[in-house]
Amino acid sequence: MFANHDNSGTATTTSYRVVLPFYFYAAIAFLVATVLLFLSTGDLQGHYFHPHTLAITHTMALGWGTMIILGASYQLVPVLIEGPLYSNRLAYVSFLLAAAGIPLLVYGFYVFDVGWPTQTGALLLIGAIISFLINLGTSMVQSKKENIHALSVFTASLWLLATAVVGLLLICNFSQSLLPAGSLSYLSLHAHMGIVGWFLLLVTGVGSRLIPMFLISKYTHTKTLWWIFMLINTGLLAFVFLFLYTNSRWLFVWPLLAIAAAIVLFGHFCFRAYQERIRKKVDKPMQLSLLSVLLLLLPILLLILIVVWLMLSPAVNSQLVIAYGFIVFFGWITAIVLGMTFKTLPFIVWNKVYHDLAGKGKTPNPKDLFTQAVFNWMGISYVAGFVVFTAGLFLQQAGILQTGSVLLLITAVLYNWNVMKLLLHKATIV
Amino acid sequence: MNVITNNTLKSTVALAALQDVVDPEIGLNVVDLGLIYQLDFDEHAGKLYCSMTLTTQFCPMGDSITSAVKERLKLAFPGYEVTCELTFDPPWSHAMISPEGKEFLNEK
Image 1 (cartoon, rainbow over the protein chains, first blue to last red):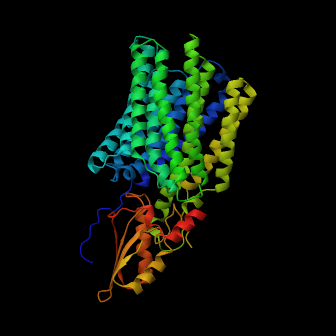
Image 2 (image 1 turned 135 degrees about the vertical axis):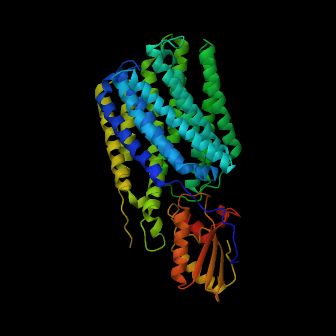
Image 3 (image 1 turned 90 degrees about the vertical axis):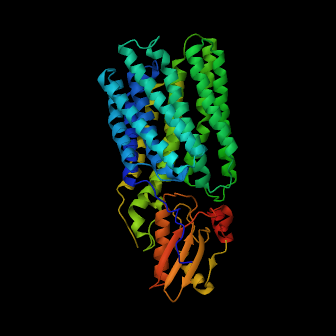
């Protein structure tokens, strides 16, 4: 019994030094996005193609959503592939490239300078995505334990790369006519490659692993997850094909139905995992994450409205498009990030601070490292801000939009309070 | 799940000590969670061998949990050389949670 034992299961996790900068950056980006939203409410009552709207959208999509997903992925990839991350250094390179590229891109959009700031920003971001892909791909090959979760993250990252390349083409197309039509014509293609290919595929792939894990649920159904993966990818590929090669608006119903079916299946998967959970009490961060699954239905409903509108009218309804974008970035993506931050960051910080003290005395619980009351108020201001702002968009009332933006700004301040408290936590042991 | 041991008496003491080591995410101790597979004692050589698992391989909290188990065993058996090893054969499953653990999670 005391001879050599197989120790192949020794856990090697990603260094917190790689992961924490992503969380810090994302928190600041969320604050910046809500400040920009507060300053630009008037612009959201006009056409969706506005410099300030583009700046807010990219701050939310890249600085907030993508940065926190990249950071969390570096922590979660070892869990998904059951093997270590290939390179911490490459992960840090991806942070530096994205951290430098995003402000350039956002600044370029805000002042609508589609010259060097946006082009350099986009190139740096593409470099960051390629670093992420190399790191993820090599980790997967070395672990030899590919599964639907890891495959979803890898495929989603390929879609992110494609989105960024199309984005760079659209930027360059403003000054040099590279594409057959103007950049505005391709905005829907760029947006949906990012929203569906990157965010939706990644959230379903990772969420289907994390949600049962955090709920301690007995439910697993790999076949459903493969269906979700296939429906999203075939739906999106069909959309890209139809976008580029046909003029019939009716045909867009098919990719929309495929993606809607994937969302319904994912919702069903989460519901079954919730039903078959062993831990009965669901904590607040998890409640917020589950709310985000429900919020997925709203953009689908709006997208159906937009497609129906397009069939009946030759012009795009700008109000619907802005509401759709707002619900995607400030609704679904923000809800999942707000919830998952406080399911992952406290554990990363706890590991950093208490790893060497484990078992030597009474340490606080990870959930005690942030202020629960601040989290609760953040949740209340977020839900209120989201509802009020969405109502303002439909009613086209400046006062309601301003109120909603103030509530979302409060949400970002409270979120930052707790994130900074976590990041600055020092050891307390009894 | 029953823990394999070559010394039932000492194993009872060890398991009582390990009740203090809690999985930080779940809030349940490693014994009721079913993470401890084996506890063997070599009284002459003063050695204690512990074989355990984690709820998921490459769990970010894995290193901290195994360190805590090792420290607690050292405290419970001063002078013993403690070896703590991870295994994922068999992998952990919900069926390994003790009835007390299940009751705790239902109440939580």
